Length: 599
Image (cartoon, rainbow, N blue to C red; front, side, top):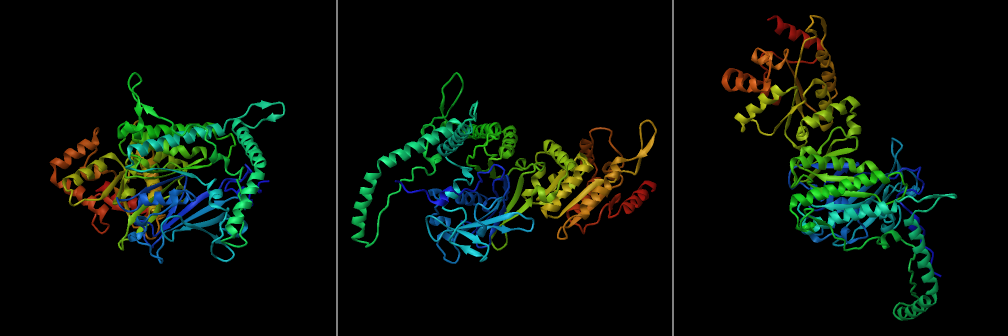
């Protein structure tokens, strides 16, 4: 008879118990790989990870590193000499990738589980390449507090069967590679849909679905074939053992056909040479690789949208299909501006079914949506000593945005898709409205050499200023804020005096500023009582931004005043102009406002 399967073949990263939450990948640590040196780059993982940073700082290398550890056991995990630092194997600086996973049961084994302060269960693994080719995988043994050649979850093919399957799309893949990636995504979605098909109910309850029936039949057929051929297998084993023992005494040969191992990867439900054609409905259809770059990229998003929608349809079917990981370089390439926004929505929707994770590199702020709960933004940069550093600059659970914040930021994203531009570098200035935003940008345009690398964020309201400050506090970069003080009370059109809601937002802005980290410097300025009155002497009844531009163009004195204000927001030691207040208490702000109004 065929040998029984080894015990570890039954081990899976995902519990067979549907009540047990599936493991969550939480951290990736990389060092000595390509341009990444001996200082580790740490990436916090989430449903969606967005990598931002300048060109040639290692963002694509991070994507590739993630693909490597998800692909052990295949040729994708092999390294070439050019993947080693300086194109040389240095025994003291070998490529190393570490993966941290949060688990919800003891399936990997108690020896590998570290209990964190918050009660979560952490398992650590690492991969080391001693030379070109395949890596060595190790597990962190908690009792000995050291790395071990033994590993959690058993053999690579067993563990990887339930790790996310990587689907990588490079920024400048050839048309053939892009077409191959699109077809692979579509075939995977179709295959998963087949595996998730529900069976018809009968009198005895729900039957196995057709795919499970197929797997069962194949298992039975394989076992039958092996049983019938066992006599011939034994004869081959005996003959081979006789031959090998002449060279290696006391050695034996035992052929194990493993008839029931990993049938999912053995059975192909559809032809391998599938074709994907595209073209006008009444014209010639050609293969995807013959389409233009924009068409190929648009088709990629169409395929991903199909996957997302089909995942949603099948998410309650309960089948344990392998999760997936989309790794994509610069998704904004070759897309029409309208298509970029749609592509962003598709990416953010993809993980909603619970079976996909996404990691992207981007140079477009449109691909950052603050209102989402499942997104980590990591800034990748090259520091002074040439090392690469990855810094998590945004993570929703750390920023602690409330529902009002999310609503404010969602509306701001719609109005200004470039609001997240500050994540890509530069000094940050938050202003309340369109007039000051337009005025400052006019000065930047007139003196481009004096005002480089400055991001002016238009909040479009005081409440949104508070939401943005929360993000900037988490971002860890210095910033400044300019808002209208407004007045404590107002008179309505009907002549009724009442408390001014706009003034009521001032304490919220101050509280947000006071919550900044100690290492962050911020300057809070208020125009008394508003931008137009403070610096132009009157409020335009209409077209305020346009009137501000005309005033700055025609009036050198006012141009100088607004420039002084801009300098004060950039350099915190610069003096502020008249009718502007730097404030730290509500009482102090009201006192300065009263002095201006009574002057």
